Image (cartoon, rainbow, N blue to C red; front, side, top):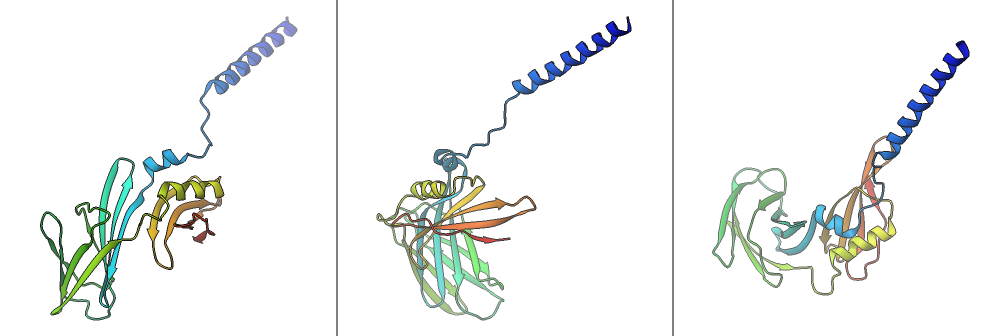
Length: 215
């Protein structure tokens, strides 16, 4: 009887173990594959239009950011002079629907952002007038993503071909500082934390550069 009891216990535990294994095998596995370009295009903020213009006092950058079906605009104004951090400056943005006017405080920082503007055509020249301290600047912003520039989708594909294991892509920017380039930003985890990294991609040839990382 004792042997029979031990045998029954063994069979019971074997049955429980088998059921646990079946349940585990039936659960969906978490996907470890990298997202493809189409999936990333729906989720990653991506610069699709980039206008720039400057004079000796101010620089302006107008961007259109796409994220899936959503679009937003940003105008960054940078003051390129040192001076009083008090007072205000006024800006006037000429648009087909009339001027957009506003006023911002002159603070210690040199960057000022105006959001939710109109969408301009890529061949438009955007005129921005800035008035401050009895001075006046007129900026003409023109589109720098010209027809010879590869699409951001192509830049992203080239990046993914070069860095197959990178998944945490956060944004794609454009700049024409020291040559036209796309910049793919991502987070690289090392188990104890990680680094914020950016890879430049030549916007004319598609050549992928080396990562630049900061912790």
